[in-house]
Image (cartoon, rainbow, N blue to C red; front, side):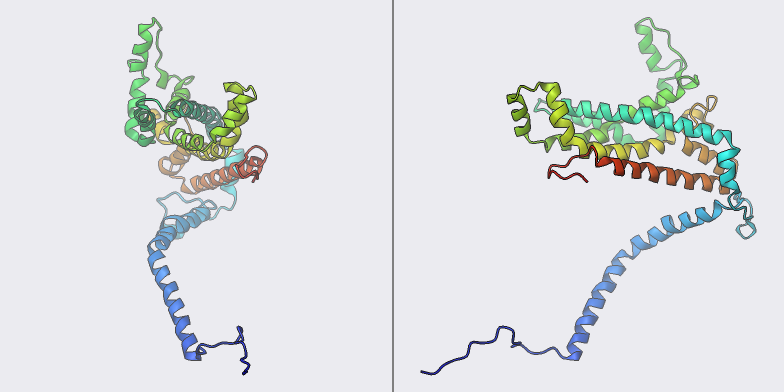
Length: 326
């Protein structure tokens, strides 16, 4: 009987690529990479022209005394003078910081609470619930539009609809948007009213909570409030974290409503002088573009620090369904 040798599985049986073949494969890969960059080129050009180059230019201008009217070749380098003025010699700057912090610390939590409360109500199989979801989301579609801000100002002036409603109950109204004690609060109410976007995100998160957890909690004797605290909130913590970060950033960036309400001045009596509005007045009204650039970079760093704090502390209270905290 003739013995046959089993083929060596490690032995190459196909044709060995020649150097020319390897060069062909390399050219093909290079061509694929080049094609990818060609398709990315519109985005890359937009990134450079609209974001990267203007950011670097504003960083340079923050160390200068640029006023828009001066030719760029004659810009005066002043070093850290703009930053020194900002922190030590500009009371309006610190006033705008206080106004913005007050707005964000009050409006953002109330907006998230309203969004979560309405999401819990709409997370049911009611007849017409889809219509109510759309109606509650509708204000968020308008966003920070000028038209909405104008309507809001007219609603809360002395002859507005809000005072007309109060008069039905025998309550004397006020010129809310012209009262320094209430002008900022009207902006807060506008921000809270636009809770539709976080509401939709909360609804999506509620749909992902397993019903078995509520059934188990009910068997253990937990009531609705206990189920909300022990089941809903922990399971929604990633969604709460996401909404908290986004809405905090949006709260600090408030501009349009404050601009329309005060006619671009931050009034009455600087009660609505938000940080971004103060930055706009400095750069485009007072023509101090170098100082405004310094304000913008401090604002960017402050937002980055606040976001970093959220991410560093989130691991203590944000829980994920896989059992791992991040």
